[in-house]
Amino acid sequence: MAKGGLIDTRFHIKTLLVGVQSPHNKTSDIDSYYQEFVNLAKTYGVTDYDLHLVKLRDIDSKYFFTKGKLHDLKEIFDQSKAEEIIISDQLANQQERNLQDIFDCPILDRTRLILAIFEKSAVTAEGKTQVEIAKLNFEKTRLAGKGIHLEQQAGAIGVRGGPGETLKEKTLRYINKNIHTLKQKLEKIERSRESQRKQRLNQKVPHICLVGYTNAGKSSILNALTHSDVLAKDQLFATLDSTTRQLFIKDTKVGVISDTVGFIQNLPHQLIDAFKSTLAELQYADLLLIVIDIADSNWKSHINTVLETLEDLDVEKEALFVFNKSDKLESEELQKRVSEFGFFGQYVVVNTLEKENLAPLKKYLATWRPKRDRS
Ligand SMILES: Nc1nc2c(ncn2[C@@H]2O[C@H](COP(=O)(O)OP(=O)(O)OP(=O)(O)O)[C@@H](O)[C@H]2O)c(=O)[nH]1
Ligand SMILES: [Mg+2]
Image 1: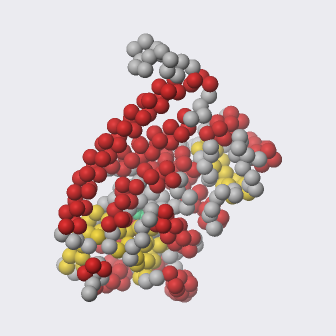
Image 2 (image 1 turned 90 degrees about the vertical axis):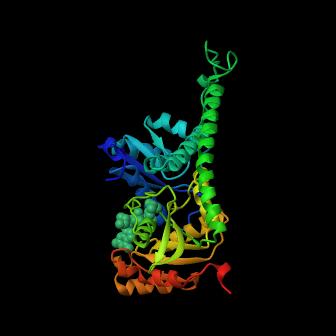
């Protein structure tokens, strides 16, 4: 069962999951996109669902779905007796509201779904603050087109801003004030992270970062290498906070190693922004360990997602691919996949089930030195 109370409180809710293939969806592998969407919904706590896949040639500006598709969807929704709808794509303000009116039930789009998962997964003050800021920024964008009632004047007695201020303006002011306070809090946390980072840079401590697709096994590898107990769970976005630990191989200090938030396809930009400070660690990394679940049937598209996200973040670093979960494949299939990887770069094949199965990674790290120390 997922961490937090979401699953318990969502017990018995029937959900209609709508996977959308649309012109602006840049995904190269639609099957893996759908599968990932279902996994996201499950991580959110969805257990009872129908999945409906829709291919859209055009996006309707008012309803997102074009007329015929919307009609089909309504029929499917009525038959399914669902109580909520989750859509794999992002909706604009007006589309969300119009769909809510038509279906008369909660509608979650991609951003809302991921925000809800983030909220559930944030543990540290930094993670929680980042998620809170992302949520408020999202609400701000949702406020932009809110209905006429919010345009009414809200100059109630005792409310700062006084007569003349609309409810929308007042809400916006309230949100901005909260964002400001949270950002100050975040800056304070970041300053302490920064001073630790500076100290490491001054002392030239090599910094290794684990990156990769969500659920690939990054935290499990960190735990196995450093004898830690970072939460490792079979759910997406189990890690939202970066954890940094000292890394010793055979009693020799190699440097420090950080765990990071996992990536997914089409991670809404607002949400990447929210985690920029955590992901800033990557800019200072001397080595990236790109962890890939080699046993996942979508392993290739996961590699692409990770490389694209790193490019988005302007991170260009020395990297080692770590093909994890080798235990889940027959050796023939494993060999086939590894040989298909070919040109991508240097790699090791590991799994975290047994200590000795991490030997290739440990061996690599034992002899690795940051570029600046190589003659
Ligand atoms: N069979 C097998 N399972 C593994 C292996 N490594 C990790 N797992 C499992 O995969 C799941 C995800 O592992 P995590 O370490 O939480 O993955 P992560 O990349 O940190 O995930 P996020 O923090 O959600 O991005 C857990 O249930 C682990 O027990 C492995 O080598 N073999
Ligand atoms: Mg993790």
